[in-house]
Amino acid sequence: MINKIALGMSSLRRFPVISVERKRQKDDGAIDAIVFGSDQGLVGQFNDVVADYAVKTLATLPGKAQVWAVGERVHARLADAGLPLMGLFTVPNSVKAITPLVGQILVEGETRHSQGEVTELHLFYNRHKSRTFYEPVSQRLLPLDETWQRDLSKLPWPTKNLPEIIGDGTATLRALIREYLFVSLFRACAESLASENASRLAAMQRADKNIDELLEDLSGSFYRLRQSGIDEELFEVVSGFEALSKSHNPGRRK
Image (cartoon, rainbow, N blue to C red):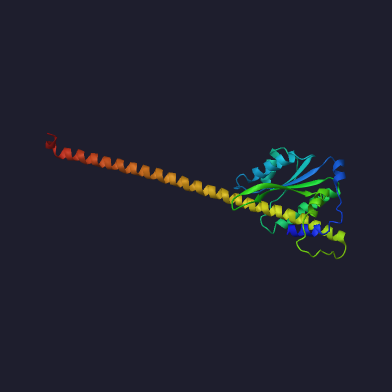
């Protein structure tokens, strides 16, 4: 989906996107960051990994960072790291709940943009790699500046038929940009949820393995104790039998 939107915007690249390069110099490079984490436990190092990655990456960027956390647990870890936290979003509990979250983020971003407070927006989240593995990644979502336009212009059109624009090109471009922002945020949240579930699955598998090993050790200890008890009882029976035999047959002592 996001590749198709990017192709659509590349077809409109002759329409200039308003750059924020000058604004960045004015407000000394304010940076907003959204870090996707979890609200629940049993996820292993999920929140630690993405929080550490965000802290290290933001430290290399010029300007003052302001962070929004998606999830109470990652919010606590970012606070421990000393990052200035501006807000907290609740982690969606289903795929359908992602859209309302993205809407909240876009409304917050639009409010800050209208107030002239933001020049960059970065996303940090864990990207799902396999059934139980993930990796922390980041994406600079805004600004749509000259660098972004240059990268966009490098995208090749997949067919020989050149695209045509129906209606106002600027309005079309603005609509595509809104879709680009929405899909990028939706993908980041979906990837984070998939990674969270993968981390939880891995943690449960480790717990299950530990339980099996503990049960095996306890079973071994139980059987050893049981066998020791049986041996002790047999020894007492044999000793008692020999004692009784000697008492009933005193002549056998000679």
